[in-house]
Length: 103
Length: 231
Image 1 (cartoon, helix red, strand yellow):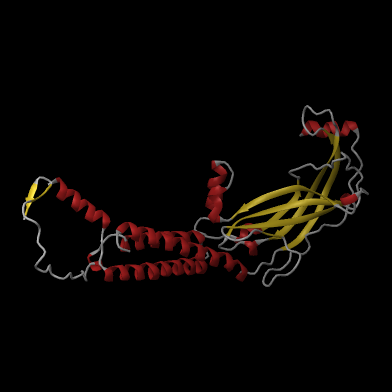
Image 2 (image 1 turned 90 degrees about the vertical axis):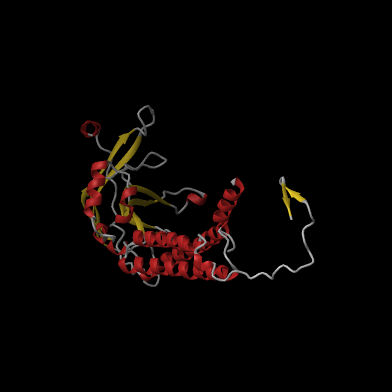
């Protein structure tokens, strides 16, 4: 019970995503952050307001963090399909792991 | 990009790069803003030389020049979105008397008055009391920049600093001039001082020198005392 809970917590904390998701995340980070920087600069320059530029830049960056850091479902749409376990290799009989008998 | 921690680190890493590039662009945007500071008036209105001590317990007596002046200048073009504050100061300059080695042909220069003009984006940094701070912030309410703060108009201004010389003698000094200086301090970028040469859109500060004048003779003792008791 405790192990299951710890496993779940670890999975949530690690937030693993699949390979396609990793590619997408990298693309999103690059494009979104550059866009935020450009918007912050031009809005600040046109309105002659440096504080606006700073707040736009920081706020936009926070949004990018929210978009990219958690393992959103759209990062996990292409799970790796492992080959099925082929016969021939089987666990030895009466293998004891953590006081439990497997096999 | 495999786990959340790696994504956090990579995103922050690229954020620092973007922040640096945006800051570089902001610094470069200063070059696009024309700078046309002008001085329409800089003259002395009252000159006085008195004897005094550098500090209360000093036994040494020195001569101090008290130079009152009038100033009309327009620095409003120096205020852009990247201007944090403008430092304006007036110096008195006079040629060095003789001297040897590096002292020859040197110019004595001493600040007699200065002021810091903050841009509205830097008002909270001004070193003033709460009442003055409220007034300052209200003066620029709703404005991100306030070029009108760059218009200086001083009439018969008392100097902030009474100046002397290492020799302790300044009375009857000839060929003294006042010079107005400025120093633009941006949020990001390089500090720039008053220029002598034109640099693309940045014009030099003309008319920043006053006419030559001579400091008066030392005040008589009783007169000096009267002056001292008033201050």
